[in-house]
Each structure stands twice: as structure tokens, then as C-alpha cells.
Image (cartoon, rainbow, N blue to C red):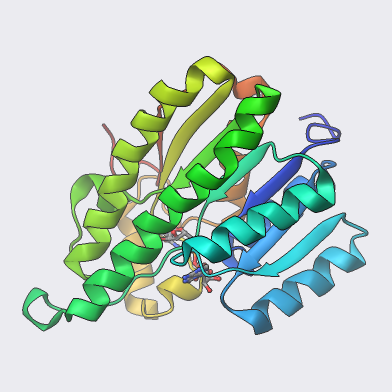
Length: 251
Ligand SMILES: NC(=O)c1ccc[n+]([C@@H]2O[C@H](COP(=O)([O-])OP(=O)(O)OC[C@H]3O[C@@H](n4cnc5c(N)ncnc54)[C@H](O)[C@@H]3O)[C@@H](O)[C@H]2O)c1
């Protein structure tokens, strides 16, 4: 792994105040990228900014609700104004709530699709002109094992939202590939972030026992994969979905 892999490049990561999005921002900054962390959680955003600042990273921390296209356009505009280029977009923002099908409200359906799917569509649209102009880009969508398997236990809209990202990835890969822009997707499972705080110790132990490598995922595992897909070296990988689940689900 080259220490300067992202020197001169700018990465915009949604929902990146914490969890795997933040870890990826931090790791990319260590490898030379200017990074934009953006989120609705302003307290976590402040904490993330402090860590990046201590590392001496070139960064912006922006409040950005991905379900609002104006906020996404504004955040992308600010990124370009500050760093003059945008090489990498990671659509990482997501929510997951637990409700049986019959108790899922209209609001939760709208919110889940609005953030997990519309957010990615808005961000891809917003970055496309800048990426096309420079004939370079790496777009990564964070889907989920639930996008492929269906969702066992959380709202059924979550699986739907993550499945949609698989298709979005392929459409973008077809349409932006000729402009030097690749689009890929990752499908994680069992990473103990805030999103997964509802898993108790018993569930974690049970899940780890069912994963062939006998452990849960880490934010570093996710970051390593996203950094590879975001790197110049990954230019011939386009429209792929990469399972990252220790072998729990293979296809
Ligand atoms: N943790 C896992 O096991 C797992 C598995 C599969 C997929 N994922 C996906 O990974 C992505 C990152 O999640 P994580 O596990 O790091 O959890 P996380 O909760 O640490 O990160 C998600 C972030 O998204 C932010 N967010 C929520 N709504 C937003 C909005 N409207 N606009 C902008 N940001 C918003 C949250 O504030 C949070 O910081 C999500 O898309 C999630 O669905 C996670």
C-alpha cells in the first residue's frame, strides 16, 4: 500500500461523522487525501473534526442531510470551492430501524428510502459534472448484505433501500464509465457501529459464530476495501458489488 495513494485527491463522504465512513475519511487523510466529512449528527461531526485536526489532515466538516438535495448540492459546491476538485464520492449515510412490517409507518418508509437511496442519487448527480470535467472519479455506494439476502429483522424498507443501491451502482457504472468514472458497491455485514447498537452481546456472539472467519467486521475492514475501490489502482473494477462479511454470505 503506497503512503501517497491519495495525494492531491479530494474525497467527499456522506454520513461520515462516525462509524465506517469516518474511519475511511481518517485513513484516506493519512494517505494524502483532502477529506470532507459530512453528516446530520453535528456533535459527532465536531468530534470527528477534532480527530482529523489533531492528525493535521486537510479537511472540511459539513452539516449535510443527504435527503435534502439542496444541502447535498451546497456541500458538493463547498467542497469544490475549497479543494477545487472532487475525485471520490462515498455514499455511506444510512439509517436502519427495527419494526415489523405491519408497524412500519409511512414516515419511516419515506425516511429510509429518502436517506439510503435518494441521498445517494442526489450526491451522484451533484458530483457528476466535476468528475466528467476532469475525466476521473471513483464512486462507492455502501449497500448491505440485506440488499442481496433481504432483511431478516429490521424494517423491510432497509433491505429495499440497499437492494436499490446495487442497481444504481450498475447504472452509474454504465453511464459514467466512458468518462473515466467508476462506480462500485460494498455489501457489509455485522460491523459494530452506532447503527448496530441494538445488537446485544448474545446476538453478537451468535453472529460471530456463524461467520466462517469467526469474528465480527470492523470499521477498518470496511475502510481498507473502500480505499482500494477508491484508489487509482482499481480503475478496471466497475459496477461490482463486493461482499465483505467474513464469508457469511457468498455469491
Ligand atoms: N454496521 C453494519 O454492520 C452495516 C452493515 C451493512 C451496511 N451498513 C451500512 O454502512 C453505512 C454506514 O453505517 P455505519 O455502520 O458506519 O453506522 P453509523 O451509524 O456509525 O453511520 C451512519 C451515519 O449516517 C449518518 N446519517 C443518518 N442520516 C443521515 C442523513 N439524513 N444525512 C447524512 N447523514 C446521515 C448518521 O448520523 C451516522 O453518522 C450505512 O449506510 C449502513 O446502512 C452497515
